[in-house]
Image (cartoon, rainbow, N blue to C red; front, side, top):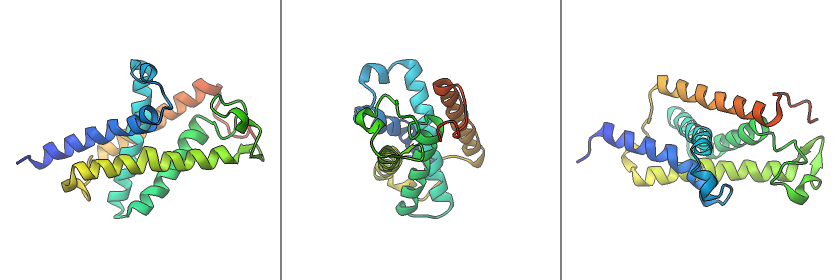
Length: 178
């Protein structure tokens, strides 16, 4: 019989790593050679691992359902793709192709915005949480991290968002795209 702390630790680590695997590796967004590059892997784990744990902890601490987790996942998608990466606003974003000019209004690519918001909600957040809770059913309504660790994860996640945002565009403003 496994003790509670061991189960929580294993579930936390599984959740932390399964989100970048589902969102980037299994979806084909990042090819395996690039995914396992230590630099890229660190960024992806910081983005997705911290994000999914934060979203799950908010769901658990607020006593909410998977419907709420879906909404929290949308918030995560908007923050990651819209604010950090800024792909919602960049008509030349590498993954857009023809969508770079199709579906744009007031400086936002709405087709891409809706697609990526839903993608991140389901693939980056809800599925990893559901898989984790299926593998570790005893942690379903239990916090996986302390409040202090949650604050650290928020800081790490926000720091990576800022670093990526500045690295990709050299600036942090949304108004430059509008």
